[in-house]
Length: 348
Image (cartoon, rainbow, N blue to C red; front, side, top):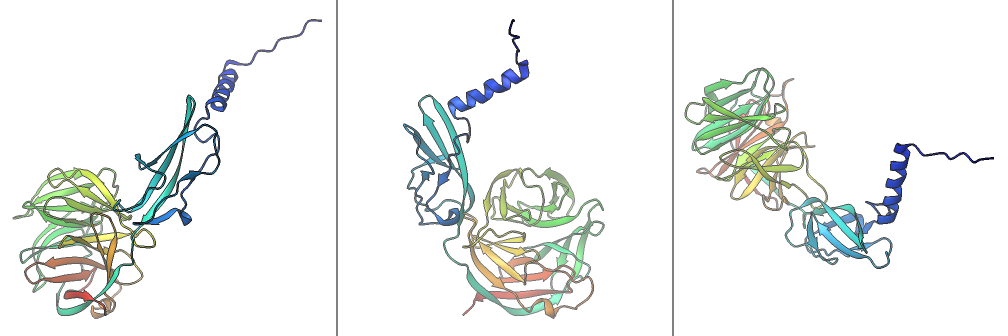
């Protein structure tokens, strides 16, 4: 009696060959090797040192470690790296075979933020219908961006009277967001339309638009005289070229405990970024180091919302502008009928 030979279908043969290949060379994560950092919860601060090892020994293996694709030593000490969530990678070579495994590590701010409060200097009238998204002075001229579909606008305001001297409504399809003034241009963001607008500073005539890239939404905007800083509702602040508005890089905003999300209206003051936080538990502004992303200060604006007319459309604290000559801050909120001039100082 002859034995019947059964041949594997071609697809099954290819699949079996692939599995055998992975078993031979290791393949990504096949050995179930994991990175151990030596840090509790894979949380670190500047000054902390790694103690990188693998959870199992692999005979004859050579291991190279990477921090965001930059090679590091197993005992790497953190000194000035940008804060946030980063990728640790181990490339493991055993003879002619190699594979890699990764894990994440969160680098936190090295200390708790300093606490600040405010002194109310004066209050001014403010358009109660303005859903304030962006606020910035250019000399004594106050530029304001407002939101909501069908109500969004760019406007020039006499801050002493609240009078709107120039008003440029946006098409109803756009939801206006933050703005900043740079190089005789006013740059305004939109929320979810994935584009920003550029206006002539003198007459507020729109000159062009520009697309968003990795940052999918527009929230707050400020500048340091050269580049733009853009928030998108996450804990990231994106750095944009001041001429082309293309995204160059980003920082992750971190406290000593966690990432800080919902960063909204931004203002650049003396080398720091001041940011409103949308729908935070109370009215606060955070002070951020633009190099590392560390939250260095928190300004408590408790009580300021109670000083405006309370009505059904009254919304959150949002809008911060620094007057460099007066050396004071001006703050308001969405659908607030007052603009407040304040001084910020450390809490005792």
